Amino acid sequence: MDTWSYMDGSRVVRIEIDQNEDGLIDRWEYYDASRTLEKVGFSRLNDGKEDAWSFADADGAITRIEVSTKRDGKVSRIEHFRAGRMITAEEDTDGDGRMDKWETYEDGRLAMVAFDTQHRGAPDRRLVYGSGGSVRVEVDARGDGTFVAEPAAK
Image (cartoon, rainbow, N blue to C red; front, side, top):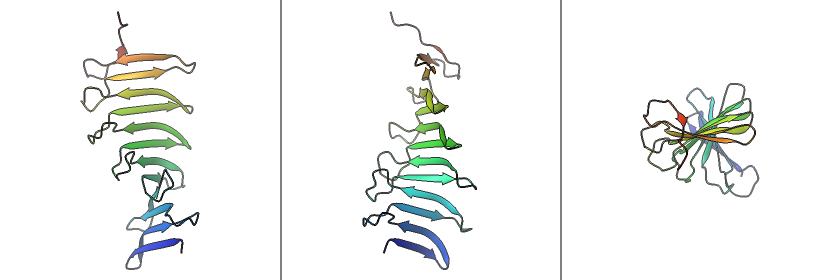
């Protein structure tokens, strides 16, 4: 057997699949009350432990992937996609349940990464990467969303 279906009466709730027939589940499909595929779970280490979930639009294109970076079932990273490319990501790096790192991608490259070093719930420091490899450090010391170049160290 390589596929297991879990039902609520005649409605499929979840399907688990061992796609490569190694005895470990590779894919978890979750269905909502209207019998629509809600999300697909997978194992980033291919070890049978579900630690990430993909969400697709009506056309089947992936729009979001949620990741449990500690593999404990708690989502700590969310990646957003458009036209098959990652456009943004947010992450709870310290495990307090609040996002504290934000990444922005342009044309397939990391363009900016911002951090909440003050635990305010919003970024206060960011690195802005130029397309030629340059990097600029900016800070929002007041917490009002206004970033300025970090003063040079003396």
